[in-house]
Image (tube, rainbow, N blue to C red):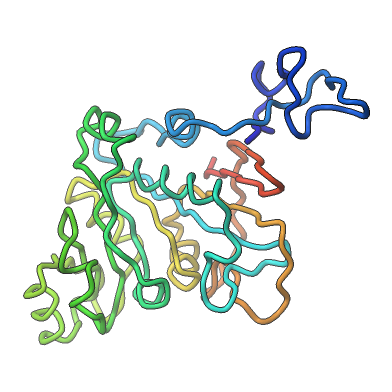
Amino acid sequence: MRRLFPVTDETAAHPPEGTHEAGEHGAGGTSVPGAPVDREWTFAELAAAYAYPEPRAAGEPWLRANMVATLDGAAQHEGRSQPISSAADMRIFGTLRALADVVVVGAETVRQEGYRPARARAEFAALREAAGQGPAPAIAVVTASLELDFSLPLFTSPLVPTLILTGAAAAPERTAAAEKAGARVVVAGDGVGVDPVRAVRALAGLGHTRLLTEGGPRLLGQMVASGALDEMCLTVSPMLTAGDAQRIAGGPSVAVPRRFTLESLLEDDGFLFSRYRRP
Protein backbone atom coordinates (compact mmCIF):
# COMPACT_ATOMS: atom_id res chain seq x y z
CA MET A 1 0.00 0.00 0.00
CA ARG A 2 1.19 3.49 -0.85
CA ARG A 3 0.10 6.92 0.30
CA LEU A 4 -0.48 9.14 -2.71
CA PHE A 5 -2.04 12.10 -0.88
CA PRO A 6 -1.28 14.13 1.14
CA VAL A 7 2.31 14.35 0.03
CA THR A 8 4.59 13.84 3.03
CA ASP A 9 8.20 12.86 3.65
CA GLU A 10 7.02 9.25 3.76
CA THR A 11 5.17 9.62 0.46
CA ALA A 12 8.27 10.95 -1.24
CA ALA A 13 10.59 8.32 0.26
CA HIS A 14 11.94 5.36 -1.69
CA PRO A 15 13.12 1.93 -0.48
CA PRO A 16 16.67 1.39 0.74
CA GLU A 17 19.26 0.57 -1.92
CA GLY A 18 19.04 -3.05 -3.03
CA THR A 19 15.30 -3.55 -2.36
CA HIS A 20 12.92 -4.20 -5.20
CA GLU A 21 9.46 -2.98 -4.18
CA ALA A 22 6.80 -3.23 -6.88
CA GLY A 23 5.98 0.02 -8.62
CA GLU A 24 9.06 1.90 -7.38
CA HIS A 25 11.71 0.92 -9.90
CA GLY A 26 12.31 1.80 -13.47
CA ALA A 27 13.74 -0.31 -16.25
CA GLY A 28 16.58 -2.51 -15.07
CA GLY A 29 15.45 -2.37 -11.43
CA THR A 30 16.88 1.06 -10.61
CA SER A 31 15.18 3.09 -7.90
CA VAL A 32 12.95 5.92 -9.01
CA PRO A 33 13.51 8.84 -6.62
CA GLY A 34 10.29 10.21 -5.18
CA ALA A 35 8.22 7.05 -5.74
CA PRO A 36 5.88 6.28 -2.80
CA VAL A 37 6.82 3.26 -0.70
CA ASP A 38 4.65 0.23 -1.49
CA ARG A 39 4.27 -2.20 1.42
CA GLU A 40 1.58 -3.74 3.60
CA TRP A 41 0.51 -1.31 6.30
CA THR A 42 0.03 -2.41 9.87
CA PHE A 43 -3.37 -2.09 11.50
CA ALA A 44 -1.91 0.64 13.74
CA GLU A 45 -0.90 2.65 10.66
CA LEU A 46 -4.32 2.18 9.10
CA ALA A 47 -6.00 3.24 12.35
CA ALA A 48 -3.91 6.41 12.41
CA ALA A 49 -4.71 7.15 8.76
CA TYR A 50 -8.45 6.79 9.38
CA ALA A 51 -8.70 8.28 12.88
CA TYR A 52 -11.91 10.20 13.56
CA PRO A 53 -11.44 13.97 13.77
CA GLU A 54 -11.57 15.60 17.17
CA PRO A 55 -15.15 16.78 17.82
CA ARG A 56 -15.79 20.49 17.79
CA ALA A 57 -17.98 20.08 20.86
CA ALA A 58 -18.44 17.36 23.47
CA GLY A 59 -20.82 14.67 22.29
CA GLU A 60 -20.88 15.89 18.66
CA PRO A 61 -21.30 12.92 16.30
CA TRP A 62 -19.34 12.29 13.11
CA LEU A 63 -20.88 10.11 10.42
CA ARG A 64 -18.61 8.49 7.87
CA ALA A 65 -19.55 6.12 5.07
CA ASN A 66 -17.45 3.32 3.63
CA MET A 67 -18.32 2.00 0.18
CA VAL A 68 -16.69 0.35 -2.83
CA ALA A 69 -17.41 1.03 -6.51
CA THR A 70 -16.00 -0.17 -9.81
CA LEU A 71 -14.56 2.10 -12.51
CA ASP A 72 -17.98 2.19 -14.18
CA GLY A 73 -19.80 3.03 -10.95
CA ALA A 74 -21.18 -0.36 -9.86
CA ALA A 75 -21.52 -0.74 -6.10
CA GLN A 76 -22.21 -4.47 -6.36
CA HIS A 77 -21.78 -7.46 -8.64
CA GLU A 78 -24.57 -10.04 -8.63
CA GLY A 79 -26.09 -8.27 -5.64
CA ARG A 80 -23.02 -8.29 -3.38
CA SER A 81 -20.01 -6.03 -2.82
CA GLN A 82 -17.50 -8.80 -2.07
CA PRO A 83 -16.71 -9.64 -5.74
CA ILE A 84 -15.44 -6.09 -6.38
CA SER A 85 -13.42 -5.88 -3.15
CA SER A 86 -9.85 -6.94 -2.30
CA ALA A 87 -7.76 -8.08 0.66
CA ALA A 88 -6.53 -4.52 1.29
CA ASP A 89 -10.10 -3.22 1.04
CA MET A 90 -11.19 -5.73 3.67
CA ARG A 91 -8.32 -4.64 5.96
CA ILE A 92 -9.55 -1.06 5.73
CA PHE A 93 -13.14 -2.29 6.18
CA GLY A 94 -12.08 -4.00 9.42
CA THR A 95 -10.12 -0.95 10.57
CA LEU A 96 -13.05 1.41 10.05
CA ARG A 97 -15.30 -0.92 12.01
CA ALA A 98 -12.75 -1.15 14.80
CA LEU A 99 -12.64 2.65 15.11
CA ALA A 100 -16.43 3.07 15.22
CA ASP A 101 -18.85 3.13 18.14
CA VAL A 102 -21.66 1.87 15.93
CA VAL A 103 -22.10 0.61 12.36
CA VAL A 104 -25.31 1.84 10.70
CA VAL A 105 -26.70 -0.35 7.92
CA GLY A 106 -29.92 -0.65 5.93
CA ALA A 107 -32.22 -3.63 6.36
CA GLU A 108 -31.89 -4.71 2.71
CA THR A 109 -28.12 -4.83 3.04
CA VAL A 110 -28.50 -6.98 6.15
CA ARG A 111 -30.62 -9.39 4.13
CA GLN A 112 -28.45 -9.45 0.99
CA GLU A 113 -25.01 -9.49 2.60
CA GLY A 114 -25.88 -11.90 5.44
CA TYR A 115 -24.75 -9.41 8.07
CA ARG A 116 -23.24 -10.78 11.25
CA PRO A 117 -22.42 -8.96 14.51
CA ALA A 118 -19.14 -7.09 14.67
CA ARG A 119 -16.43 -9.13 16.35
CA ALA A 120 -13.74 -8.15 18.82
CA ARG A 121 -10.35 -7.74 17.15
CA ALA A 122 -7.30 -8.39 19.34
CA GLU A 123 -5.17 -5.99 17.29
CA PHE A 124 -7.53 -3.12 18.15
CA ALA A 125 -8.35 -4.06 21.76
CA ALA A 126 -5.93 -1.59 23.38
CA LEU A 127 -6.96 1.21 21.02
CA ARG A 128 -10.65 0.73 21.77
CA GLU A 129 -10.04 0.52 25.50
CA ALA A 130 -8.02 3.74 25.44
CA ALA A 131 -10.89 5.42 23.58
CA GLY A 132 -13.40 4.26 26.17
CA GLN A 133 -15.10 1.89 23.73
CA GLY A 134 -16.38 -1.63 24.26
CA PRO A 135 -14.77 -4.65 22.59
CA ALA A 136 -16.72 -4.21 19.33
CA PRO A 137 -19.06 -1.69 17.74
CA ALA A 138 -22.81 -2.15 17.87
CA ILE A 139 -24.72 -2.74 14.65
CA ALA A 140 -27.68 -0.39 14.07
CA VAL A 141 -30.18 -1.57 11.45
CA VAL A 142 -32.33 1.07 9.75
CA THR A 143 -35.74 -0.37 8.93
CA ALA A 144 -39.29 0.91 8.50
CA SER A 145 -40.99 -2.50 8.43
CA LEU A 146 -38.79 -4.41 10.93
CA GLU A 147 -39.19 -7.39 8.59
CA LEU A 148 -35.98 -9.06 9.72
CA ASP A 149 -34.99 -12.60 10.63
CA PHE A 150 -34.47 -12.29 14.38
CA SER A 151 -33.03 -15.80 14.55
CA LEU A 152 -29.85 -14.63 12.79
CA PRO A 153 -26.58 -14.29 14.79
CA LEU A 154 -26.83 -10.50 14.36
CA PHE A 155 -29.64 -10.67 16.94
CA THR A 156 -28.93 -13.89 18.86
CA SER A 157 -25.21 -13.60 19.57
CA PRO A 158 -23.80 -10.05 19.31
CA LEU A 159 -21.13 -8.87 21.74
CA VAL A 160 -23.27 -5.77 22.27
CA PRO A 161 -27.04 -5.67 21.62
CA THR A 162 -28.03 -4.85 18.06
CA LEU A 163 -29.95 -1.59 17.64
CA ILE A 164 -33.02 -1.14 15.46
CA LEU A 165 -33.62 2.37 14.10
CA THR A 166 -37.22 2.82 13.01
CA GLY A 167 -40.13 5.26 12.94
CA ALA A 168 -42.76 5.95 15.57
CA ALA A 169 -45.44 4.35 13.39
CA ALA A 170 -43.66 0.99 13.12
CA ALA A 171 -45.90 -2.05 13.63
CA PRO A 172 -46.11 -2.75 17.40
CA GLU A 173 -45.93 -6.53 16.90
CA ARG A 174 -42.67 -6.23 14.94
CA THR A 175 -41.24 -3.88 17.56
CA ALA A 176 -42.15 -6.40 20.25
CA ALA A 177 -40.53 -9.22 18.24
CA ALA A 178 -37.32 -7.22 17.90
CA GLU A 179 -37.17 -6.47 21.62
CA LYS A 180 -37.95 -10.11 22.48
CA ALA A 181 -34.97 -11.11 20.33
CA GLY A 182 -32.73 -8.84 22.43
CA ALA A 183 -32.48 -5.87 20.09
CA ARG A 184 -32.89 -2.31 21.33
CA VAL A 185 -35.46 -0.36 19.32
CA VAL A 186 -34.68 3.34 18.85
CA VAL A 187 -37.33 5.66 17.37
CA ALA A 188 -35.83 8.13 14.88
CA GLY A 189 -38.78 9.32 12.84
CA ASP A 190 -42.37 10.46 13.23
CA GLY A 191 -43.87 8.14 10.60
CA VAL A 192 -42.94 4.64 9.51
CA GLY A 193 -39.55 5.68 8.13
CA VAL A 194 -36.33 6.96 9.67
CA ASP A 195 -35.06 10.54 9.49
CA PRO A 196 -31.26 10.26 9.00
CA VAL A 197 -30.55 13.44 10.99
CA ARG A 198 -32.69 12.22 13.89
CA ALA A 199 -31.00 8.81 13.69
CA VAL A 200 -27.57 10.39 14.06
CA ARG A 201 -28.77 12.47 17.02
CA ALA A 202 -30.43 9.45 18.64
CA LEU A 203 -27.25 7.40 18.39
CA ALA A 204 -25.21 10.28 19.80
CA GLY A 205 -27.69 10.42 22.68
CA LEU A 206 -26.77 6.80 23.45
CA GLY A 207 -23.10 7.77 23.55
CA HIS A 208 -22.29 6.65 20.00
CA THR A 209 -20.52 9.62 18.40
CA ARG A 210 -18.12 7.80 16.05
CA LEU A 211 -20.57 6.57 13.44
CA LEU A 212 -19.91 4.42 10.39
CA THR A 213 -22.40 3.47 7.69
CA GLU A 214 -21.80 0.71 5.17
CA GLY A 215 -24.94 1.45 3.16
CA GLY A 216 -26.61 0.14 1.21
CA PRO A 217 -27.16 2.59 -1.62
CA ARG A 218 -30.68 3.58 -0.59
CA LEU A 219 -29.67 4.38 2.98
CA LEU A 220 -26.56 6.26 1.88
CA GLY A 221 -28.63 8.24 -0.61
CA GLN A 222 -30.97 9.31 2.18
CA MET A 223 -28.04 10.35 4.35
CA VAL A 224 -26.54 12.39 1.52
CA ALA A 225 -29.84 14.08 0.71
CA SER A 226 -30.46 14.96 4.37
CA GLY A 227 -26.99 16.47 4.82
CA ALA A 228 -26.19 14.03 7.63
CA LEU A 229 -23.01 12.64 6.06
CA ASP A 230 -19.70 14.11 7.26
CA GLU A 231 -17.18 11.86 5.51
CA MET A 232 -16.97 9.49 2.54
CA CYS A 233 -14.44 6.66 2.40
CA LEU A 234 -14.65 5.28 -1.12
CA THR A 235 -12.69 2.36 -2.55
CA VAL A 236 -12.36 2.56 -6.33
CA SER A 237 -12.05 -0.98 -7.64
CA PRO A 238 -10.05 -1.40 -10.90
CA MET A 239 -12.85 -3.42 -12.50
CA LEU A 240 -15.50 -2.92 -15.16
CA THR A 241 -18.79 -4.77 -14.71
CA ALA A 242 -21.39 -3.07 -16.98
CA GLY A 243 -24.84 -4.46 -16.19
CA ASP A 244 -27.43 -2.58 -14.17
CA ALA A 245 -25.87 -2.64 -10.69
CA GLN A 246 -26.70 0.21 -8.31
CA ARG A 247 -24.41 3.15 -7.63
CA ILE A 248 -23.13 3.59 -4.09
CA ALA A 249 -25.98 6.03 -3.36
CA GLY A 250 -29.50 6.21 -4.72
CA GLY A 251 -32.78 7.88 -3.95
CA PRO A 252 -33.61 11.56 -3.59
CA SER A 253 -31.27 14.09 -5.17
CA VAL A 254 -29.91 17.21 -3.53
CA ALA A 255 -30.84 20.70 -4.73
CA VAL A 256 -27.21 21.78 -4.88
CA PRO A 257 -24.41 19.18 -4.96
CA ARG A 258 -22.25 19.40 -1.86
CA ARG A 259 -18.51 19.49 -2.42
CA PHE A 260 -16.25 17.51 -0.09
CA THR A 261 -12.50 17.95 0.48
CA LEU A 262 -9.96 15.21 -0.24
CA GLU A 263 -8.38 14.12 3.03
CA SER A 264 -6.20 11.23 1.88
CA LEU A 265 -5.62 8.81 -0.99
CA LEU A 266 -3.99 5.38 -0.69
CA GLU A 267 -3.29 2.78 -3.38
CA ASP A 268 -2.79 -0.97 -3.35
CA ASP A 269 -2.67 -3.29 -6.36
CA GLY A 270 -4.59 -0.83 -8.50
CA PHE A 271 -7.30 -0.19 -5.88
CA LEU A 272 -7.64 3.43 -4.74
CA PHE A 273 -8.75 4.19 -1.19
CA SER A 274 -10.00 7.75 -0.94
CA ARG A 275 -11.18 9.66 2.09
CA TYR A 276 -13.24 12.83 1.63
CA ARG A 277 -14.77 15.00 4.34
CA ARG A 278 -17.07 17.99 4.53
CA PRO A 279 -15.15 21.29 4.72
